[in-house]
Every structure is written in C-alpha cells, then in structure tokens.
Amino acid sequence: MKTVMATGTFDIIHPGHGFFLEEARKLGGRDARLVVVLARDSTVRARKRTPIVGENQRLEVVRMLKPVDEAYLGSETDMFEIVHRIKPDIIAIGPDQKFDVDELREELRRRGLECEVKRIEKYRNSELDSTCKIIKRIRNMDFNEDALKNC
Image 1 (spheres, helix red, strand yellow):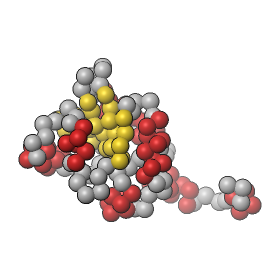
Image 2: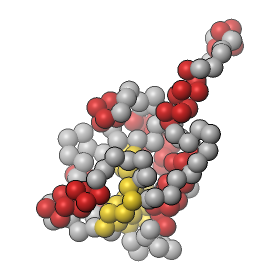
Image 3: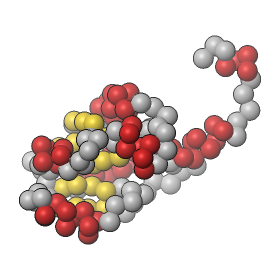
Image 4: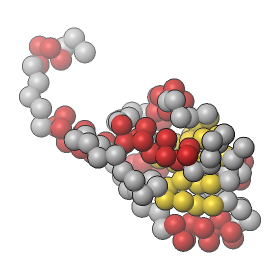
C-alpha cells in the first residue's frame, strides 16, 4: 500500500478541495492511504492571509472528508518534519500551490527522503472554486443586520 501525502490550508472547504484530495489519493493506486497535512495558522498568515477558520477546526473538518485516511497539522518551523515522520511514497502538490516541484524534490533528496513529488494538474472549475473567491463573494453581499443577530 502506497502512502500519498497532500498538503494545504483547507480554510473554507469547497469542491476544489475534495477534487484535489480525490486526485491525490489516485496517485497511489487502488489501495493508497491518503495523509493530509494542514498548514498551521502561523504559516497561513505568513504566506497568504489571516485564516478564516482556525487550524484545529480545519483539521477536524478535513479528517471527516471521505478520501482522507489521516490528517495532521504541519510544523511551524520545518515543513519537512512531518515528511520524516510519515515517510510518504508520493507527495501531491495542488495546481495552485506555489511550490517549485524541482526544488522540492532536491530538498527531499538532500534530507534523505525518498519520495516522488507530483503536481495535480487538473482543477475543478466552478463559480466558487477557491477560498479567496468565497471571501470576495461574502464581502460583496448585502446582509440583513437583524438576521445576523441570530447567527
């Protein structure tokens, strides 16, 4: 059985996340095990923006997703720490993740980690196929302030 590791923020879960995780799992073949590593809140703040959903809740939700066998929070200091611990056969990189695959492969080799790195090229296009698009949609909505009091 091959172990595939997928990483990401998984802030506001949308169909693109599910599609990415299904495609990542397929990389390992029929009996693959999918392990997901979520970016810590501090990492999200440093690289993207303030997360909407905190890391513990994001972890809880990702663990509930059908393709996911295991999920963990990543390290705040060394993103390769969990790779050492899990020892995946394959690391899946999403189509919108800003990793240089060749540099990542080289760093894995340098650290003595033998695993393939594969970028998922397919993307599930939909009207709200990214967390940023969802945030923009919410910002542009008109809200009934009385209705929001019940939230």
